[in-house]
Amino acid sequence: MQKSPISVLQEYAMAKGIALPNYDIVSEDGVFKCIVNIGNIARNAKATSKKAAKHTAAEKAVSFLQSEGMMFNSIINSTIRPPDESDIIENKVGELNEFCSRKGLSYPIYEFEEHLGLFTARCKLLTEEADGKGKTKKEAKQVAAKRMLEIVTSGSSTIEALTRTARLSSPTASVSEETPGQDQMIIELFKKLSFKTETSLNGDTKFATPKNLTADEIDLLIEV
Image 1 (cartoon, helix red, strand yellow):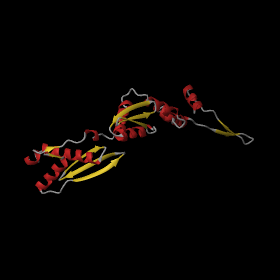
Image 2: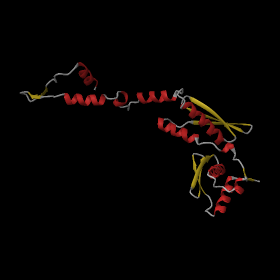
Image 3: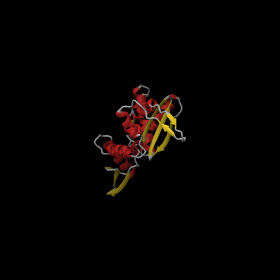
Image 4: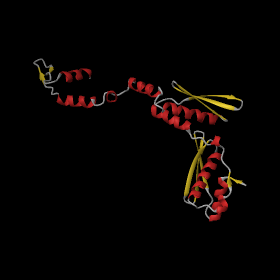
């Protein structure tokens, strides 16, 4: 008889006389995260449905208990029903959104098509595009986001070059960002300058020309 890892964990708790497993499930960008606590053990898993997340978290807890020799033979001998593989997908949509936030980019755009019960999602980010297929829109979207992440982190993407160019051409870019160390040079130069003032007979104030400046220092003052 096939048993789910959830049932196996419950039987284990009852046999050991400890509290039944506790499952905490939260949703993050359409992906569910489940944390199961049993005794002093905690395991977590992510999936695109609550059922799959709970199943996988329980399965991880069962695997740990087996590896530690803490399971009873009568429970171990039960066949554990495997989860639906299509549900166990990491939250790549969230990871891609985090990448865009770090780079100062707008979030990607997703387009969907359905053909014979199979969904195709197209992820568009600046000049890059990536497709993903799945039984549901969520699954297809996750696959497309995963492929886009592979593209933009591979080093061959134009995303990095485009964001760097935009950053350098921005009117708010600081001097220190383009020419590291120049700010400190300017500060030291102004410390070196010693302006003296003289008051003429008609009351006008005159500034004496600073002495001992090199040609490079004069050029830097002109740029400032």
